[in-house]
Length: 579
Image (cartoon, rainbow, N blue to C red; front, side, top):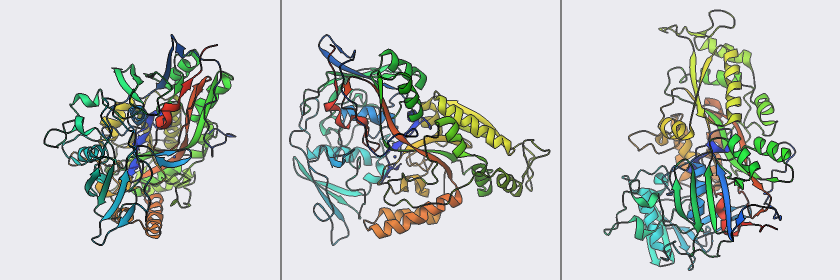
């Protein structure tokens, strides 16, 4: 979430159960049974592939969620971030081997590069690689870091994330072309996280007076000048994005071309993989772990599944502005009525562990939380207490509260369409809630409509099922602080989509994000996690692993299960030559 959706999250809006719905969550806000889930798998090279033709090495990637923007900061979709990762690099990456420098020569550390000054500011020194170039040949310099910050902090920009974090920076001082100093207004625990700083070409995104261009309308975001291994050469909305090897990137990418093909559903993606029309799926916007396992088993020898522990948090949001869902008894009743463990067994072959919190299992500040059991009898009692009474056994409950309308208890459950497993999961949720007298109407929409126009703008009336991508450094501030509720007034920034307004939680998260003291953060975030399960602003389902399915003959693919996209090592991807 820079759910730090990201001080710890990268948002990622996901079509819930399947990868296509991931969101980059709060910035400063992660397999099927019997599979190894604590190690990252990479694709083994073999000798059979159809991707090398006429001397051109081309890799075709499939995704079910169309990229909403090719410009960093202008989309919080995880699938979009996967495509952007082919074009743009970060200062640091979180790889299967740990965090490492990317555009930066090294990751700054407390004491060596980061320090608290006497005036209360927090200073971090960075050094850029001297060989980094933009795709037009211009060197990447410290001024490009400043340009990215200016865009992120500019209220006139239609950015979807990063502004809250950028506003914590007092200034960025350019020491020389390759060295810069970030002066934070206060201690910032996310000072060296992935996507804390977005690097954009100053010569393309700034005007002559140093102010940012209106990038939402600028051609840059449709055909960006990037600093990554590939350059966008053609975009056909709803069909594909075609990229070519950047002549400026070092080390020289092994592939000539990459095509990102947009397919309408995971069924279509599976068929394309089998037919050879697609060489690999993307980690987000691709196949779910269950779909991947079944597909590989059915085509043994032709396909391989690559997995890493994941940060994709699948959950059900409650709209706390709704008069019915404002009542915590109703929210707890709905949670108790759903047998999440049985749902996993039915839909996902028991591939996931049901989770109660919003931190992935490898998060250093995660605490054990009491489980919300499956207890439909308790759910019925809570609904009775809340004033929603069934007029007859098995009937839909009616509003019998003092001054109530007598209307049936009917709730809309929204999610992204095109995901077979998601739809099956929602049908089971619908049946479980109907069993305790709640009539649920499913509202399935294309992902861009569901999230960008619905969930993100808080226009969904009752329940929404989707996922955030949450990394191990998030505090949850962008997810749960009351001042992170998206609205027209704040340009729909923030990821507190349920609208949870808890003064204690907001204070604790603000304190945690203002401290680099581990003890303070641990104490505060433990209490926030406890309040989450007590007040139930959302119901956690599970964290799903990162999964990529590839045809044999593709080498180098290595999903990270972190904020860093599959393309973190795209320069090393390769396809075998035909025999």
